[in-house]
Image (cartoon, rainbow, N blue to C red; front, side):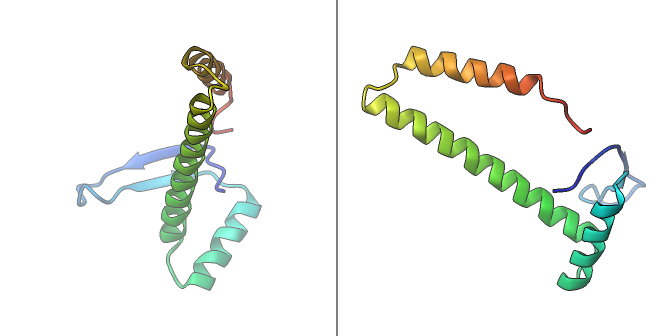
Length: 102
């Protein structure tokens, strides 16, 4: 996973689908980024794009697994809809307190 410390986006009149972005990365992340770019024979930007897509896909899959699990509890009458809503509220509140980007 890439440790994003600072992100600055620039669009220099290029196609709207292209953005120049600066990242402050630690030495270990840079080493891994360079190794992956060489191994995969792609640009560093492509390595970052793939990592971001994979992280997003994994996040979505994790969320779906949690929802499926809650649905299973509800179907088996092990968890009421109100209990599920309370649980999701607690999880959301805890996640809101997580530090982002450091």
